[in-house]
Image 1: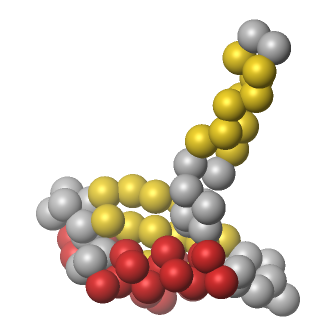
Image 2 (image 1 turned 30 degrees about the vertical axis):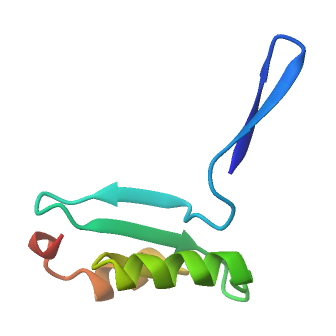
Length: 79
């Protein structure tokens, strides 16, 4: 979710709860990564977004470090 000033108006864009990092792998799978600090907590909207990604066949990750990503995605070809 974000906003940009266009002229004198602010335009909001994005979906509330969408992940910090979104990508599509070579095999066409959606990757959604929600970045959190060690004590960070998902909002209800973020949890819902990640659930929908998983139910749609995508990969949804809550990452608190790069090693979190490496553990979940050891083989990058699964994307």
